[in-house]
Image 1 (cartoon, one colour):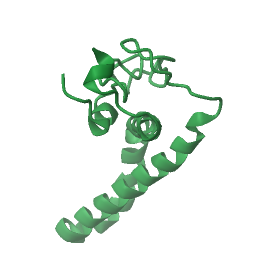
Image 2 (cartoon, one colour):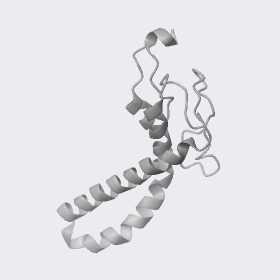
Image 3 (cartoon, rainbow, N blue to C red):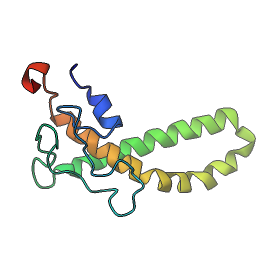
Length: 126
């Protein structure tokens, strides 16, 4: 198997080391009971998903960057395509951000961990 991509692991809820084990317990970010429950270790390769207490505080910065990037893109789309409806931008942005919160939460945590875990080479996995 090819070396796992960090981008793949961030986008598809996979371990950044092996690219196979699930990072979060549930596949859906909208499972109200377990949207924030993570595996402590990769079920496939045993990589530690919680390297130290408070590790994921840095994910707050990633989450902030995701929100800002989304809002800028959303605003530019509105300005360029729906200029006459610009008032609706202000009305629609809050509910959309609330709906996207579980996705951004999960993506920020996976991104933060992927920054610090090196993908395993195919020799290490064999």
